[in-house]
Structure formats: C-alpha cells, structure tokens
Amino acid sequence: MNISDIGIDLGSASILIYLKGKGVVLKEPSIAAFDRDANKIKAIGDEARVMLGRTTGNIVGIRPMKNGIISDYAVTEQMLKYFIQKASGRLSFKKPRIAICVPSNVTEVERKAVEDAGYQAGAREVLLVPKPVASAIGAQIDISRPCGKMIVDIGAGTCSAAILSIDGIVVDTTINVGGDSLDAAIVNYARDAQGLIIGERAAEDIKIHVGCAVERPEQKIMEVKGRDLTTGLPKTVRISSEDVREAMKEELGQIVEAVHSVLERTPPELAADIVSRGIVLTGGGSLLDGMEELIEEKTGINTITAENPISAAVIGTGRYAEVIQGNHRTVEG
Image 1 (cartoon, rainbow, N blue to C red):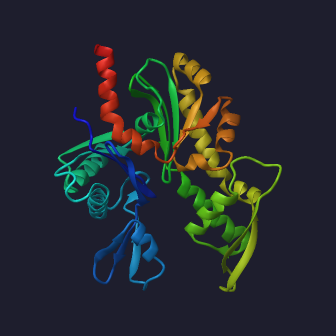
Image 2 (image 1 turned 90 degrees about the vertical axis):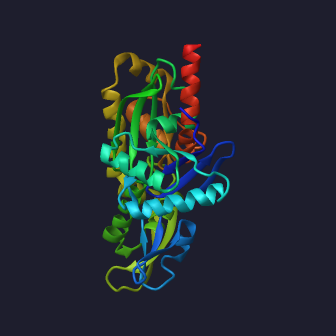
Image 3 (image 1 turned 90 degrees about the horizontal axis):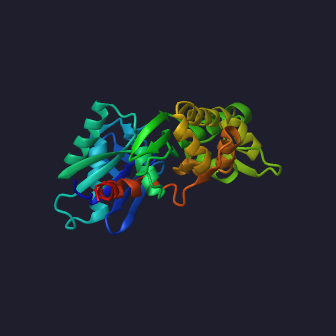
C-alpha cells in the first residue's frame, strides 16, 4: 500500500485537506455558488460563501455533500479538482494519491461515486477510509492493539459512534444527525416560539455563543436579529442558553441514543476496556458547550474531546496508510 499524498475530509459543511509533510493546509465550506442563468459554477468554498446573499437571485448555493455522501456528483467533482489544486499547487503533484474519508455505513454505489470523483479530480490512486478509523488515528488513539477504544464523531451532517480494536471497527452506528440538525432546531425554535425568521448562519452563531447541551446554573443571553414572522419587519429578541438547549433537546437525545446503541452491542471484554479508557469525541459538534458532560452523564463513562476535534478526521485520513502499514510491520516484526 502506498502512502497517500493528500488526505481529504469531504464533509457536509466543510472540506479539509491534509498534505503529507505539511499537515492540514485547507479548510473551506463545501459549498458552490451556481449561476442558474449561465448554468455554471461561479465560485467554490470561501469565495462562494462570501458571494451568496450579496448577488442577484440567479446565484444559488449548492452543497454537493449530504449526510457525508455525494448528492451532486458533477459539483463534487469540480469542487475536489478546485480544492486539490488550491491546496497542493498546480505543479506540486502530477497525479497524487488521495485518501478520502467516508461514513462507515457507505454503500457500494456511494463508495464508487466517491472513488470516481477522486479519479476524475486527477488522482492516480484513491483510498477510502472509514470515518471512525480516521477520527481515531487523528485523535492519536492507538487502534492497533486488541483492546476496545470508543470514538464518537459529531460532524455537520452525521454522528458516528464506533468501537475500534486491532485496526478495525468492531461495532458502530451512523445517524443523520449533527451540527446542521442542531442549527435547524434553533431555526424552528426562533420561528415557532419567538415568531422570528432567521437563517442557518444566524442559528449556528446562536449555537456557538449560547448553545449548551446540559443545564447551567447561570444563563447566557443573546440578542438575535431577524424578520418578524407576522409583519415581515426587522425584529430583535433575546434568547437564553436554556432556550437553545430545549430547542436542541430531541437531536441531542438522538446522539446520546446512538452512543448507547453501540455500547449495548459491544462484546463484554471490549466494554470493560471502554469503561476504563473512556470515550473520545471528535468533529465540530463535540465543541458544543456541555457535550462531554451530557454523554458522560448519560453513559456513566468518562468522556473527553480530542485535542483537535475538527481536524482529527482529515489528519487520520492523510495518515491512514502510513499508520496501518506501520502497525502491520510492528506485528510482523
């Protein structure tokens, strides 16, 4: 197996790229600005995000990844080409080896779509890496030994929980609940409880600044601007951290349930390892205030967040071939 030149975490909200020898060199929104009149992509990534909402109505945003898989093949292919070139430079690699992170429950059809997009983007070799394995490697968890390790990755489109041992997945589950679901819950709360229409970016801002997964003795308050549902005029309301927690309660419960379902199916010997070693969180959703506490409270197992939770998957994807090769050499040696 060859060592990958480029590791890619092709997420629903962001794309991250890891270059061998350089680390994480790119993190941009996985969004394209599409001109409906000209029938072509006008901008990708940061440039697209800046353009959207500030141009005429014929420019629309397209997110080609949904729940960690390709929903628009043509746009994904163009996006990959654009980001690979931007990250590595036109002359840096003639035809790079690319490792791409995918959900562990990806179907054969979805696998082929990702592989084809990688080859069409200019790869000479494409390796697909399961998200839990990539996240564990990126979080510096040694998965080579015959003992259980638990990783919970909370991304924008999905949450995956997995038990790993001897370089592989023993038990896992992936649900289509993540940061985007939490944002949508906040949008719905603002509309239904406050009569305020806000966008996804405003909801994400609320989640980051006052969102919380567990009750806090002291409430944070945030003034939120939007459009009045009844009059259509600008309106400002005050939203508390407890309001946001209640708004996200159902989605947070689903994440906890996913963790529970994996623990319930874990072999007893490995379950004992998890109790002693704890649960490690990765992904942007792990940064929600109180997420560690919520999972620890509901499972009774010590829970910590990886040092670089957002970059863990892409680092692990880029280092996958190298790490697995090294593990096999150690065993054989």
